[in-house]
Image (cartoon, rainbow, N blue to C red; front, side, top):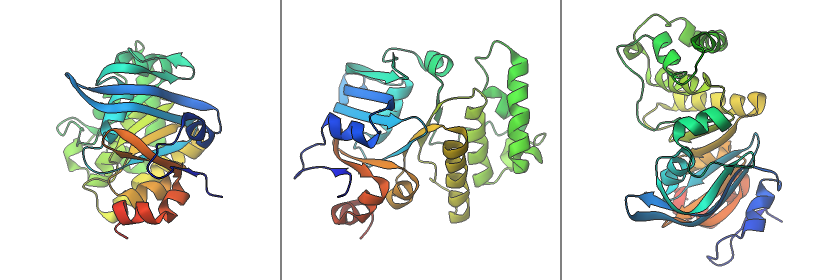
Length: 261
């Protein structure tokens, strides 16, 4: 039996969602109503992800996928509900407080490198809230040891990087603070296929070898679900379907609506 939950359009319940996170959630969202200004985008959203698990959000444009990431990070108005990380209520924490206290890092959808700053300077910007600057340098050195393509360009301006290298720099900059949670918005957007594979390999390495919990939004639903342990389908600000990534890939309704099949 597939671990996939939705009954004739009825949203999966909390016990079903928790079971996808092995009933040991690292990230917990319960009854979340959130949006921008006075506009509510998310309606009674529940979400659970286990430590070291990857969760992909898919759905049509305007479904509220990025708004979930923004809410976890602290970019939205939260009208109701609760967000917890490692059992700690962080609903009303600022992004800086979340990064510092429970290690939540956000990798933006847009090209967010500083083109005229060097690769090394861009990396060090990731540690902007560290009180001890030397720690940022130590983490930057670890990143250079891990990713030789950045090391080779450490003293060059970031504008010389390829699209894939820029995305690698954006991910690496978030790692300077040693986060436990990575929120990743559209990692494949604007990239050539070879760089898309590279980016997902990097995210997979961070999940499996560094035990990062990853919540991502990916417009390429097939790629996102192939990568992720579990997937949530959103429409109109609500979770309407959830399951293991492989099960959702095999679901004919998901295929018809989101995978072009």
